[in-house]
Length: 244
Image 1 (cartoon, rainbow, N blue to C red):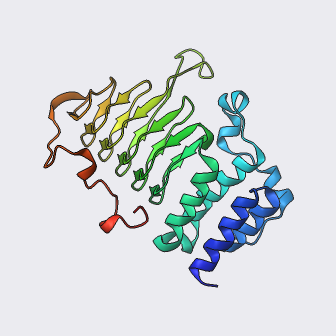
Image 2: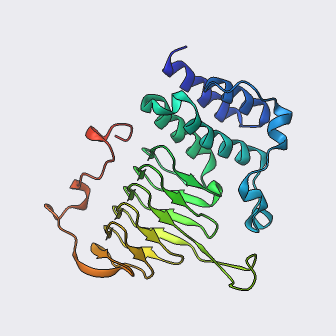
């Protein structure tokens, strides 16, 4: 079976509704053949056992889409970008609260409640990003996360670990977050904002502002070669592959 044929079959299963029966067939398409629909119905994810799992629990379809998202990184097909990138796009369109066109995610990206995540057009994540969506995360068009970025939307009581506060994060259009940076609950990155490598962002960042450090502090305004933001090249891959 060709890559295109596999993707077409997977997309049809997703469009039909990723119940456990269809999820079994989807797993077979990526080389995982050992499970039945009843097996999948018995699966419980980490998020099922968090307090948010009671507040906003997964549906059967959402849980299966999470299983598929994580599973693609554990099979040989997951290293083939021609399959894995469109595969993740299909999952995201069905799982996220909102997913625009041209979404690109590299391997190892994780989130805990996809149905609390909103992304615009041409959003991209590089390898190993972790997005805690408990408090809700929104990303504008062309927002970019590079390798191993972490976003958190909740905090804990020091006395009672189950006592939590939720505060969403917003990443503005054309904002860019560089490697190993951390975004803490309640932060809003403005349009075109840039977060430098390794920064820990504790406060919101204005439009087109570059911040670095721990805690992150303003360094300067972002550099542009054009006053038209739409002329910026903020595609993840060369020639805008998988996005344009």
